[in-house]
Image (cartoon, rainbow, N blue to C red; front, side, top):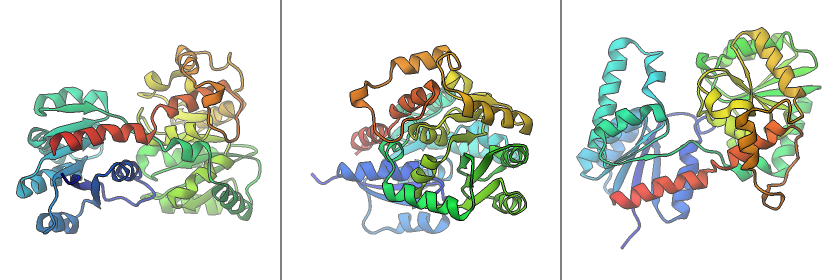
Length: 361
């Protein structure tokens, strides 16, 4: 019997911004499953509908991919797996009422027509289980080894790029999308009040122009734009802390920061239950961001990071013989966060998708 052939419709985002589906697909290919990964556009959906080669299953990622995947799977008469990675709450916060209602209903239809749904956010479980026949709780992950032990050439390239930019002192890095939801403007404002710190911004999005202007006006802000995903671990290696200012407990960048051994500044809110004392929380007020960055740079003892969450994560840490190499950061929080991140390696998460594909095909 031949291995399954799968058409995977993902968000239509730059390769450097949305990497998780690519990491999963890479592992699935290693395990023998043939994956055609396509950003969801009118062109790619039309091509999937007209494909002569055909496929054995469709995977559709929230939101456009899941909705389009419902149409493609029905037309090609093959099973649909919905990859539900974003809560509807996030969409409803920015879309108009009628549009949000329509998208919610179309997602519900995708769940109902699916052969299997893999979902990330626990808050979505009741809705998914109401419509879907089979469900699996999965997670977002991190390519742990890549970040824990960066390639030497990636480190050298990052060091050279920062030298060219004249970066000195400590570095607080923001990695990811440049959208209002990530409080980019507030981060830029905080940089103006930081002493002996450089705020390094790596990414792309609708606020890229704003970041570029701020970097041209303030020497403590450096904007690199989008960089190849393979280069990202090198930049985290040369940074001192990572910044994540989104009210989301499942954001990928915290796991990447953690795998790299960085202390993390995280927006207070929904992430508190998941990360507890593993990160330094702050509000979106620039003054509080400044406080949190400086505090994250100072933390270095068990007493400073003594919450129950931190102790639990520390208890779950691998033994010395199991640890990855790389530079050893001081600070119980960063060590515990690294151990936490290690449990979310993409290879482990890809197993959820392999089981779903083999089950429906």
